[in-house]
Length: 245
Image 1 (cartoon, rainbow, N blue to C red):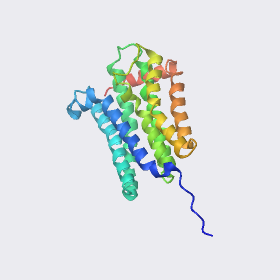
Image 2 (tube, helix red, strand yellow):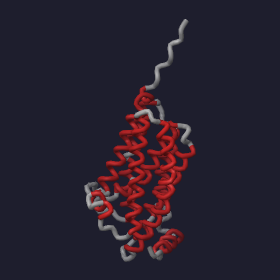
Image 3 (tube, rainbow, N blue to C red):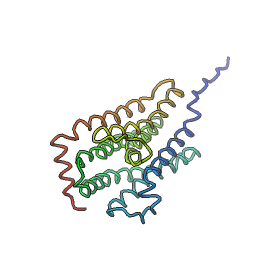
Image 4 (cartoon, rainbow, N blue to C red):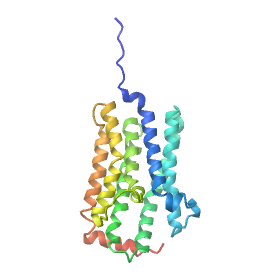
């Protein structure tokens, strides 16, 4: 008697369009967030305060462009090119970390007179930390596609807060300090909802990458808000503030 092959779960068929859509959504959010100060301002002709910010913007934009290209390659079945281009992803991710730190240092130095600026530097610091952890995990698990593509999405969610925080149409109700940071991060957590919903639909459960990665992002963010007014963090931020870039 012939064995009827098990019917694949719905999400097996729709992984490619789902992850392609999520990548496009992230890119759109990044463009909207930085439209006024960067993209609609002419990119390299934008009046940014420092050359390091131009380089930082170009490299971070390259990450999102690479995600779009990689998603297109995967959707078209060109997994061979997708894997080869992954080397570029490693290089870009490696550059993003020091450039993100330098951009943060430039910001706290330039805004030195702004109240609470050293405390506010915790936001990019925490986001770079989550991105580094999740991107590293994604590259180490690149031979496990279900883990890899979820971790790449989660790593990108980890750095989307900078764009979300610049979306002036989002209500902040005059929140300040940690309350404003919590609200900005709460907006970024909305990007976790489609991934969670997709897992529950396609797998009938949360994939461990989604569960662990989401917990890592939220946990790192919230723990960072417990240290942003402590002497060690303020001393570190003051040291960054002293850099001459």
